[in-house]
Length: 227
Image 1: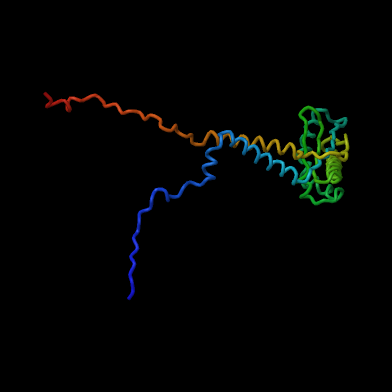
Image 2: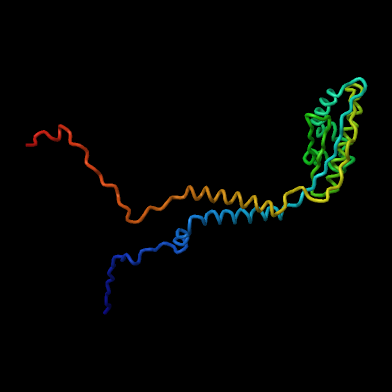
């Protein structure tokens, strides 16, 4: 003889309802300024890691000056200095510089920057590389190349470019140290933490009194039929 046992289903009591995660409650219990601290700490660590992992960069600068001939004037030299500064990183000038520097033209175009002055007929050529000696070689090679280019057009421009200062090998990197990148990252992280603090929903006070609805004035239609 087989006995049958019936099972009864009981309603789930409120005590068995899933509770909130303890981590979420702890996060909500943190003070508001913790967002600023977390943002600054995360940004500082990210900035410091970027500065430590990025190879240092070295910069070397060479200067050339435009000199007018007897058939020209200083104002023309100033204008041609501006023009030579614009074409210093073009293929027509960098063709010879790649041979003297020992790097391809693409590397020279990505690594060398030219700058001119509105007051002096001078062109500065700055090369940047992870190697200090290569940065020096590239800056001197481009300055030599632009001087040779100016010699070929001297008969028409009556302007000559001369070496004003050769690039010297840098002793310190020009890139930011890890301490500075960490400080910048901490500032950016603190700013983001402050924005998150302003955007976070603010908790309402427990047991705050709700506004009581005040009935509006009765209209004429409502008062009709009343004694």
